[in-house]
Amino acid sequence: MQQVKKGDTVKVHYHGKLTNGSTFDSSEGREPLEFEVGGGMVIPGFDEGVTGMAIGEKKTIHIPADQAYGPKQEEMIMEYPRDRFPADMTPEVGMQLNMSNGSGQNFPVMIAEVRDTVVVLDANHPLAGEDLIFDLELVSIDGGSPLIIMP
Image 1 (cartoon, rainbow, N blue to C red):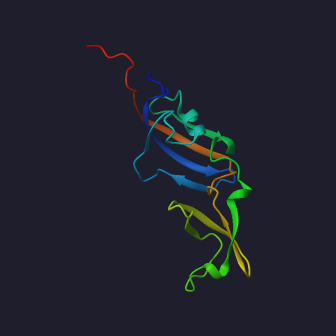
Image 2: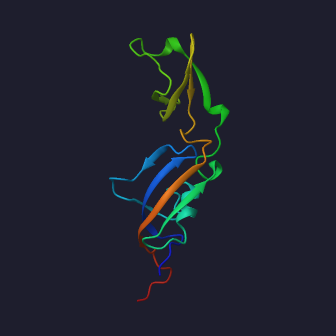
Image 3: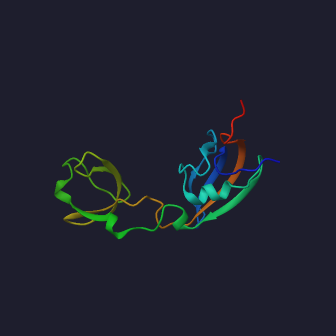
């Protein structure tokens, strides 16, 4: 029976939940997630979770924050003057925005708090600091490229 190993391209159906049971993402109703194991395309804990699985196997994995999106970083939370927002925009907690770092690179932020004169913006990944739970089902394995190619 073929088992997933580093370098394989796999297809996986998943249901991602927080430790409080709320769903943050799922492949239900969509194509399964396809990625190369060990290729840096998914969080490290997800790579480790599928390694060793066989086609058709289902399992639940628990990924601590440090193997997912890392801890929340305080330096990624900043105050932005409220009067610098467009006049026709009402900032609200939970609103997703894109900011520019001045070098032409955009990055997503979320409004964490609205005060009288400033808006607190959080540039951490929305799942930073969270332990994650995934229900997985391995759909397919496509073995990696062979190291030795026969003529």
